[in-house]
Amino acid sequence: MKKRTAFAMTVVASALWLASAAQAQQNIEKLKQMKVATTDLNIPVVPQEGRNANALRENLKRIKMPPGFKIDLFAVVPDARHMAVAPSTNMLFVGTRKTTVWAVTDRNSDGVADEVKSFAPSLKFSNPNGVCWTKDGFLIVAEHNRVLNFPAAEFFYEGPDVAVIEVVPQGKLIPEDEESYNHGARTCRVDNNGMLHVTLGQPHNVQPKDKVALYERLGIGGMIKLNAFDGSKREVVARGVRNSVGMDINPKDGTAWFTDNQTDGMGDDTPPGELNRITKGGGEHFGYPFIHGNNVQIAGTAAAPDLKGMAPPSAWTKPQIEFPAHQAQLGMTFYTGKQFPAKYQGGIFVAAHGSWNRVKASGALINFVSLKADGSADKSEVFAEGWLDDATGIYRGRPVDVAVMKDGSLLVSDDYAGAIYRITYAP
Image 1: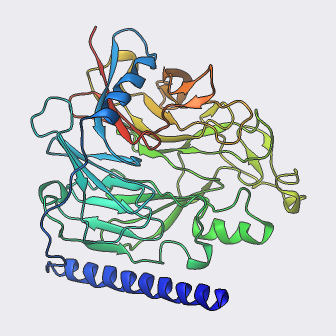
Image 2: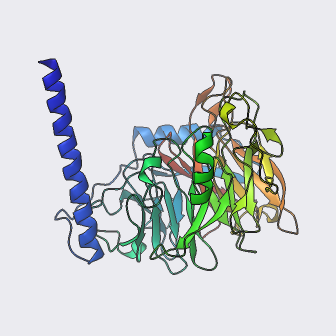
């Protein structure tokens, strides 16, 4: 009887999932034709005040930064991940690793969000972690295995139905056989030529031997670029990456930079995290899964025994910066504002999510990386820290992404606390 009941429940659950997926596809087909997909015009908002907001503000008193900097709560945003600041209005879109993209608006321009609500709720998103803009104000949402493009999203987000372009249909970003719950959060940026760049983390701790060539050919464990409107002209621009969950384009020279998370199971202090720069394009190789960092061997170790004897490419690109092991550097941004002192202008801010498998936790901070005159990285320093309680080893927050506001302030997203913070500077 119990077996029949369990089977019946499985059948019902499968039927409900299939019905939901079918409805989601019907909705996207309607929105592609600018048709109504839902009848409820009222979108619930996330409360911005109360006990939770007060506790978040109290936690921020622990954050240490250089003199003159101040951090405040900008918005309560559940599961907040990567951010895309709107080009023309005082709002932004925020991705998650769940099923929601958030629209966050500061309507009265006081430096604090007044409204947080879901964007395009008539659609069914799946791990819509990556959000970014085209040069003419189209919002890109990079999901686990689909890419969508929303025209003028910042002006038409008020209702549940918005126009949409299906750049890469569901199941076509990577082969469905390679989908995994692991390393499926994509990030994106549009370069100076209008081409969309998307990071594709490979789904293993270290990919097995029979996956190496496949992943390098497809750009899994690397980065691809493609037309931001129809997905054409797809090209692999970076290979040999483990799991990048952060990237940006240097506005000065147009080069793409990205973070890379390191292999687990090799000890607390190895291998290092990476900040990389693409200078050649055309499938530049960054060493993985053979080598991590400047010279940490992966192939043939206990973490990758089946790769023993496999040699790295004859030419591979070393990282610009090595970070301490297992701090999980994720989102990054070039600081394009003028509010912060000259030392920070043109440099890179990087969010370190914090370790999950280190004996003593490390990370949960913001790094700053300065650049040399030739555009390469100079050195890294800790800019903001305190989300990790050293006394107890407990996380009070885990930074995911950083983004520059039009006034030069810096936003920091936190998916653990479910918040976005705003850092300002006054001498």
